[in-house]
Length: 305
Ligand code: GLU
Image 1 (cartoon, rainbow, N blue to C red):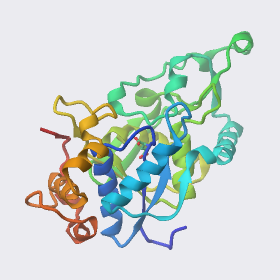
Image 2 (image 1 turned 90 degrees about the horizontal axis):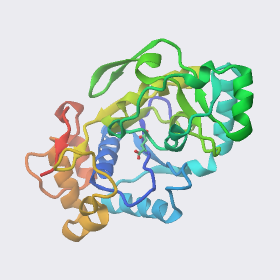
Image 3 (image 1 turned 45 degrees about the vertical axis):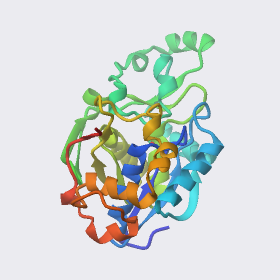
């Protein structure tokens, strides 16, 4: 998909509701980062979870990006249509002996959505890795397992475009993680790695709450023989009480914002927050391209007042 050396960024929204200010903020920065280097952005709708995602939200996400002036290139990729590719990657990992069945319950439900740090996911203690074949057989009578990747006791280090060096020990800081839920839905971590490579993405710009997912993704890329993109994790926009914005913050949802702001006004406010403008004046994404540099961006999360 990509010409050699050209930056290919991406939008990867989850269509589980209307986009809110936080989603727009990371999409704008991903777009500017790619465009300011002469590149472009592809669009992937992360509609893996059939319980949370709907077709009408997918259409709405695209209309909202267009409204804002954030364009993308090529075919839109829907994760719900990519099961075959995930199965293939899953089998490759299985052949490497890296996967085991997990009969624990709660994590299975959560694994298909991107694990934002504030969700407070804890390190899995590896309980099901240590089950004997007899114990597994017994549990399999009553339960369908989820499937976990067995991570090595290894430090993964990478250079983030904004956060600098980031390191994590896979087994100590992250633990064995879910690749496939018990209902057959593939997990975010696997899908994202397979799709970034498939779409030729070489620059991932996203919220810093996904920073701690990156070591897992780098490790999966290595196991699957896929290239590593560059990563830039941008600060989050937080609700006035310090929470990460959620779909329930209706007043910061695009539908509401559109009643008060034109697209250039909204872009101008976001650009001001990003340190790209001295004041929140109306501006188009296109006009912002020459103003974007990584060193202007804040490192700390921004609390909305
Ligand atoms: N779909 C994820 C979200 O909306 C983003 C995943 C990613 O950027 O890797 O939170």
